[in-house]
Length: 85
Ligand SMILES: [Zn+2]
Ligand SMILES: [Zn+2]
Image (cartoon, rainbow, N blue to C red; front, side):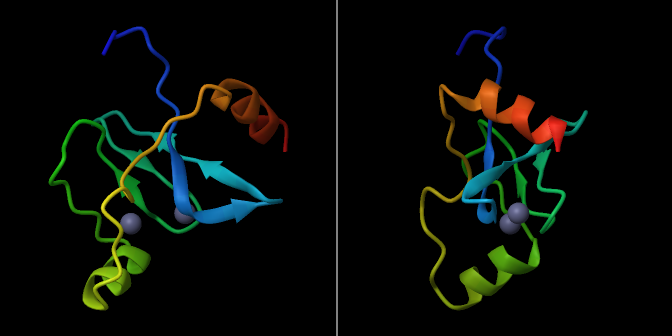
């Protein structure tokens, strides 16, 4: 993956006006949802988020395999929209 690619990751649990919440990048490489504290670590397959939602899903055996991240080509415009809120 090119290092100059802007990584856009959305929280799989939070919706704001029918759109997913963009996660906030942390200096240590994690991405964090400011709403539910869900965290994502891009590139780390076995990274385990311990936010309340993930813990609940894990304990109930409902954690989807693709929960950790997904990117979207239109993320930049969505990010701009969210920053204006
Ligand atoms: Zn969230
Ligand atoms: Zn989580």
